[in-house]
Image (cartoon, rainbow over all chains, first blue to last red; front, side, top):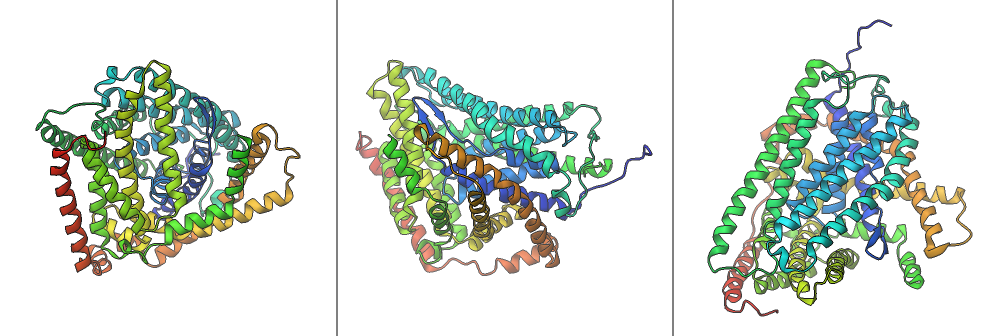
Length: 294
Length: 278
């Protein structure tokens, strides 16, 4: 074998194919998971949170960015809009954390046939996503409920609920609906599903051409932390209307309202711009690098 | 307990869910709201999705809630969807309440929760109303007229188009799995065995489905490209031509006027009777 790498980039339509595939599959599964009833054992709830194995599998087999964003869009469209559960700006946080976690999981895998690697990546993806959303939920209530102390035991109960939720999602949903199916599907689908989209399978043992040898490139991590902060900011701002048991001074409402409005719009705009820039940059880098996996 | 589980399982069949979902997604243009201008409806929705967060006056929230209930009835939403919504709201609030009782709270922690529930219900009902009464075509046109990226608008209309096909295919594969497999002899404790059996199948179904969908998405994208999709997306003239049919009619203006009058009457009413509810 020569050391020359075959140049192989995805065309615009192939990216679109990955996007559409990920969107429709994950969207469909999301409809079912929305409808599956959860088993309540006291405050502990065993629920099928989501079929994370679908976006995980697709992120490991295809280009992680398009598969991840496609899955997030699919969730918004099928699971939220079609079922009439769209939560407005709060969805932004879910969208960003979810696609980010899936993208990282996809980047962690260099050899789709290696089950150990696939398994570790799958459970890490779920853990990252759940951890982010738990932290955001706790912060939401702690910051949003100004008179937190007035309501006895609310603060503790939120942390407990979120902690239990996190453990349930990672251990129950994570193992049953992310780890095992992903380990089963990825090696099986590798080499079978790519030709159906008219592309070559990912090179095994291929390392990403993003400078460092490991999947944890500093750029990715920095971007991840930045995005997480932005997501958190957007979420907090959109929730800061939560004022529980509070008596407003007359006139304070309107001023505070406008301030919150402005900051909310700013956060959304910043998040959008950052996302756009990152996507652009990634696209340009890929074009320059001519990476193997497009 | 076991009875309840049995009843729930009896209610939930794939066929039933399929019909409900299709009903929700497609029962649109026959309703009054479905004939309104999509751009106007989307802006209307944005108002009701954002403002409740900043309103602390319970009377105003209640008034909004009543209005939302009326529009939801007008849009003929399937009761199943409303039921799911209620279940989600009630369980979320209920657990918080129970736990805060456990930590020494009391009934007074229920009232703030109620306000929050009211806000969430207004927002969810608004989204149910708008998104279930607009048909996909009009919805995606409305979105792209308001400047949402075309990829998202396309995904939306594609999602609506492809859903029945996907559900049909999913159901076929599920049935073939059930034909070849064997159901557990006993239901087990709390139907756990049966649930596990079905969940396992549900996951396995996605293996063939992934391959099928891959083929389909390739066909879709190729069909799009042959009709010049990318060119059309990047060309403002095409967009203008496509959206030229959107116009505000008299009924749209009437609807807007009614909403504005109603909301502007609510605010003085809320200021006069802030504690109408509790």
